[in-house]
Amino acid sequence: MTTLGRPLDDMQKLVSLSKRRGFVFQSSEIYGGINACWDYGPLGVELKLNVKKAWWDSMTRRPDIEGLDAAILMHPLVWKASGHVDGFTDPLVDCKKCRNRFRADQVSSKTCPNCAGELTEPRNFNLMFKTFMGPVEEDASVVYLRPETAQGIYVNFQNVQTSARRKIPFGIAQIGKAFRNEITPGNFIFRTREFEQMEMQFFVKPGSDEEWMEKWKSWRHQWYLDHGFNKDNLRFHQHGPGELAHYAKSAFDIQFKFPIGWLELEGIHNRTNFDLGRHQEYSKKNLEYFEESSKEKYIPFIIETSAGCDRSLLASLCNAYVEEGEGDDLRTVLRFHPKLAPIKIAFLPLSKKEELSGPTMRLQEEFIQDMKTQYDDASSIGKRYRRQDEIGTPLCVTMDFDSLNDKKVTIRHRDTMAQDRVDMTQLKDYVAQKLKNF
Ligand code: GAP
Image (tube, rainbow, N blue to C red; front, side, top):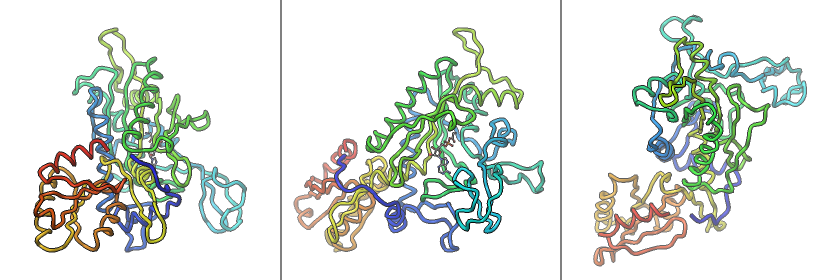
C-alpha cells in the first residue's frame, strides 16, 4: 500500500470528517451531547465490525483458541477477587473554590489549574460504575458494570476447558463492552467511559510464560502490520516497576503514533496465576489444572492481549488519513486496508439516465451478498471519486455509454487513481483478486 501524501496532523480534521461522512457522532447530540460518549454512524459501524471480525478471525481460527461472550454484569465478589473494588482507583483532588476535580498526578502544584484556588488532599476514587440489581437500591444489591472483559474469561476458564476438551496451552477470546468512570476522558474516542475491548487470555504452564509472552508480542504487532498499519507508527513500550498493574509480572504496550503523540493501543500482560489464584480463593472452587502427561496439578499462568476496539478504530482512521494536493485540488484519502474499508466498491454510472443507471444497479446486485457496496449517481464523476476517497473505498466501478456496447466498465483505484477497463464477465474475479492483493 502506498504511503505518499501528508499524514493527519490535527485530530480535529478527523473529528469533522467522521461527523460529516457518518463515522462517529457525539452521543445524544440534539440534547447538547454527553461527555465522552460517542455513537457510530453508518460507516463507523461497518468499520468497527470489520475491525472486530479481523481480530476475531485472527484469534479463533487458530486451532488453540476458543471464543466466549460473557455477561457484563457479574457476581460482585468477582471484582473483590480481581482487586478492582480495592485497587481500581485514581487519586483525585478537589478545588475548594471552583469545585473542579482533577487527577492528583496531573496537577503539578497545590493550587487549582483553573482558578488558583486551594486543592484538597488526594482521595482515591473508584473507576467502576455501580448500579443496583433488582428493585431495591441498597448495598446488598450493588453490582458493577465490568471495567474489563477479562474477568468473564477467568471465571469461565473451567467451563471452556472442560466443554471444549482443551489441554494447556490454549486461549479464550472475547469481544465486549467495558465501562470506566474515567476522570480525564477525551481526545475524541481515544478515552471514553463506555468502550469495547477485544481481549484474549492464553493459559500456559508456569515456567513457559515468558516464551509465550514473546510470541504474543510478535503476533499482535504483526496483526497491525497485516491490516495496513504503517510500521513507523507502531512501537513497544515496556512498563517500568511504577507502571505495572497489580496483577502483572511484566507488561508491554503496543503504542501508536496518534497526532496527539505516542499512546497505548493495546496491552500485553503476563498476569501470572494471580487471577485464577484469587478466584479460587474467593469462590472456594478448585481451579487447578491437572496435566495428564506429567500428572502435575497447577494453576495456569495467563498471557493477556488486551486491545481497545474503539482505539484500534481510531488508530486505523489516523493511520489511513492522508491529504494530497492543495486548495481546489485537495484530495483527502482514507487508505484503509481493504479488509477494514467500510465500503469495498462504489458503483457509479456516468449519467443518471435509465440507460446507464439500470445496468449499473444490476451489476451492483451481483456484489451485494458478498460485500458492502454503495451506489452514487449525484454530481460529476470527479466529485464522486473524491467522495469515495474520503471514506476509503478501494475501488470504484464506472459504467459509461461505451459499456453498453463493449460490455466493459472502468475500475478506478483509490490509492493510485489508475483506471483499468475490465470486461463485465471478469469483474467478480478481478475485484476479488484486487481486494486480496492490495
Ligand atoms: N484486561 C486488561 C486491561 O483492561 P487496560 O490497559 O486497562 O488493560 C486495555 O486496557 C485496552 O483497552 C487499552 O489498551 C485500550 O486500548 C482500551 N481502553 C482502556 N481504557 C479505555 C478507555 N477509557 N477508552 C477507550 N479504550 C480504553
